[in-house]
Length: 198
Image 1: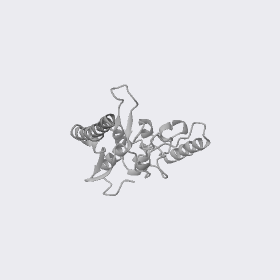
Image 2 (image 1 turned 90 degrees about the vertical axis):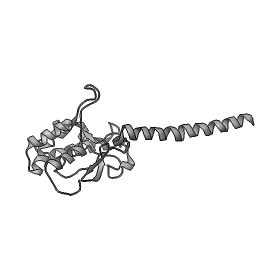
Image 3 (image 1 turned 135 degrees about the horizontal axis):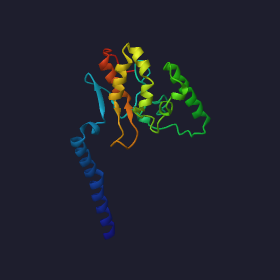
Image 4 (image 1 turned 30 degrees about the vertical axis):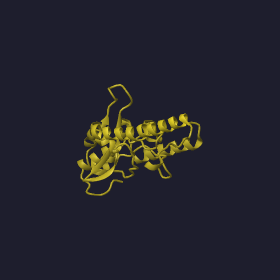
C-alpha cells in the first residue's frame, strides 16, 4: 500500500510539473521573448490577418509569385492536413506529376526552358506547406509577374532580392524567398486595392 501511495503521489507531482507548470512557463516565456513567433508568425494586411509566414498558400494569379506544389489535404495547401505525398522517386505517379508541373511552369512563364526549372517548384515539400521557394524559382517568375502587373522587371527583381533570406550564419541551409511576404510587398509596390490574395 505504501508503494502504491508513493507511485500515485509521484504521478500527480510529475503531471503537475511536466504537464501543466512547465508548458505554461514555456508559453509565457515565448510570448515575452518571441511574441510574433509564439502567436504563429501571423501576417496582416490593412489590419486583417491574411496568413502565416510559416505556411504556404496556393497563389494562382499570374500577378503573384507561385509557391511550391502542395500535397497537404485533398486540394493542397490545407494547414490542418500537413503532409507529403509519400511517393518514392521510382513512382510513376510522381514522375508524371513532376513532368506535368514542369510543362505547366514553362507554359506559364514565357521564355523559360525545361532545363532551367528548379526541382523545388515542381515537387511538394515533406510538409506540403513550405512557405519558401528557391531564389532561382522566384527569378524565373519575375517576367510573368512584371508583365501581369504592368511594372518593370527591374522593380520586381529588386523586391525578390530584398526578400531573399540568406543562409543562416552565412553557411547553414539554402537561401529562400517567402512567397506570402513577397506577394504582399508586390501589392504595396503596385497598389491593387483591397482585393483578397488569390
